[in-house]
Image (cartoon, rainbow, N blue to C red):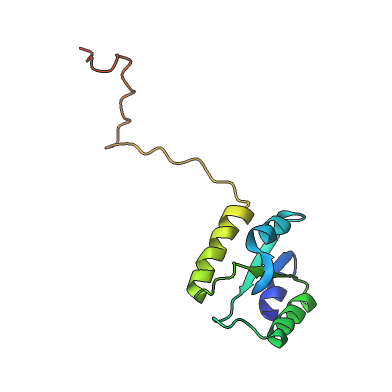
Length: 128
């Protein structure tokens, strides 16, 4: 954790500690969008029992000493497998936090030729 935070020393880093009693993930994403853009997000996910208070404090202390923002984030009250938590968290990061512009889709050619423009004839009538 310390190394990951230090490698991104020139930017804003957020460490998300998954905690059932934490801020709802949607609200956390909204808070993270405010201010300077993030250069990195680190998620700390435990097992089905979560982290002890001592472990959580150790993670938070290490991240804060390295200059990262720390947020306790909740995915809800249902116990999840770590693999499920990662997928859900990634969804929220993509949907609510991601800032990249999506390029226009490519226009592919068919067989080296451009497709013919659509006919201006009314439906059901063919042009000769």
